[in-house]
Image 1 (cartoon, rainbow, N blue to C red):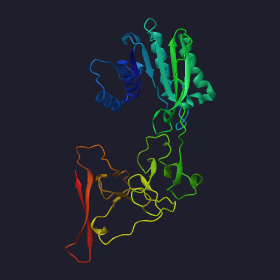
Image 2: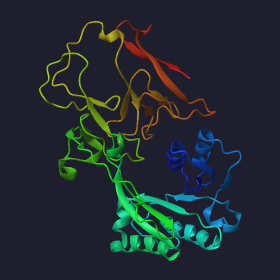
Image 3: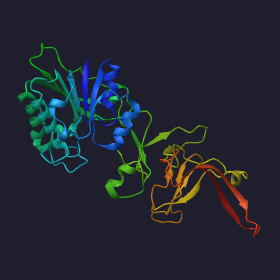
Image 4: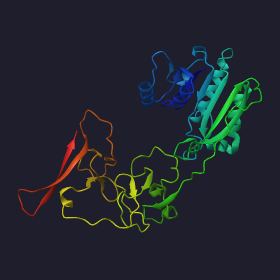
Length: 346
């Protein structure tokens, strides 16, 4: 079976359908960074390509058995403004696929697979979803839909998405979509590292989750300590009083009630160093192996300087480094003074 990959992103549909034995013959994606990723992961040399779905014409499309389109969710998601599926909105690009179907009157695909966030069922009081299935049905497609959760398919994440499948003509009676699997795994919150009375004392950015369950839906807010935090059992046998420490140096929160005894040799190899950062405390801790942005090193307002256990995108400015070692040396000007010397590997 051959398929066209609309709103392709970095190729989620492409990967899955290829694993199922299908062949991609074309793709369409507007974002230049997603385009670069797609080209890096797949052989696109002989594939049809469209950069802007609004400028694609039906007569230009190659014949395919299946069209996939996870159209933009920004105006549907509960995290957005929920303007709905309207002309002129990003989510309204759904209608561009309907236009292409009209322009391919003699060349319609046998199958359509549409994916979006679960709130598609509720947007505009349910009217948005009615429009989606109604538009597909008007063009001759029999429709079936289901909500699937990634946690039921071997992914340790709670992520619900709706899939709408259309079959051109009348189906034989057999279901178009597979029966949903069910998993007993749940999100298990074990604490919060943020001490505040806001958000009922349980702000999302500070929630800590157990490895025994699944993670919440990941978002794009990777900086500013908004990364998901998962508690990890201590590697050594330290007394545990059930408390959660308030320090997340590498996005790992240790389940320890007390710290180990400090030794006289600790000053030789400190475990972390403070880097200027535009946060409430004025700095962010970095450990060996963390990436550090050295642009404007004395700035008190610049944020996101530390990338835990990874480096940011390398630039020609040469301002990115990785913390390789931390040493304390005696200052030659005074026997009583000391300074921290950071060896950064660019």
